[in-house]
Image (cartoon, rainbow, N blue to C red; front, side):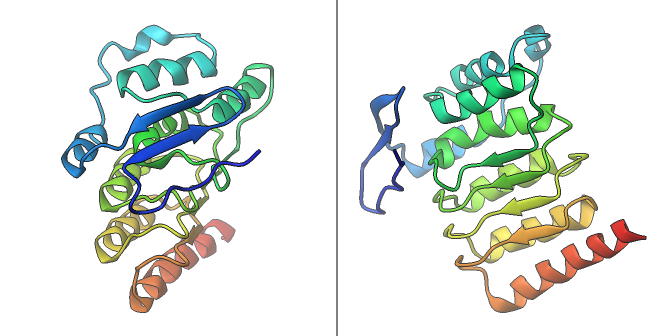
Length: 199
């Protein structure tokens, strides 16, 4: 079973896996911008000791998106005593709509070391959201944003993120629209963090 990244001209996004089989109308760019605005956290403390999978579903309800069942299965493993260090969506499409609930989970966990968001069709708003939420994450070392249609605006935001969060030592932006000079700047920034961590 595999999930396929939709083509650019699709007006309908299909989410298909063994638990979810539904169609969602692709939102307009204005609606996407609204979806990528993080909701206030007031009152969220109420989920307290809820299992991670339930917390994730709670956030999906807040952001009006369908829960990703493959990610729920991963969270269930963590609920059963596992440690969630790697969130890999390289073959599990969440897209811009499903990003925020995932970031809410990553933000609340002090164990996540890697985030793989390969080929998610993320845009500049997606990257800005990632940077604003994870700028002070205590354990995040590696972010893979390869094969996303992002450019200079995202590069600037990512450079600021890496400069602020000294824990991040690897950032993959291959096969994006980021120019070579900015790729070099990002590589230099992560190299500084890596060297700092080795001292």
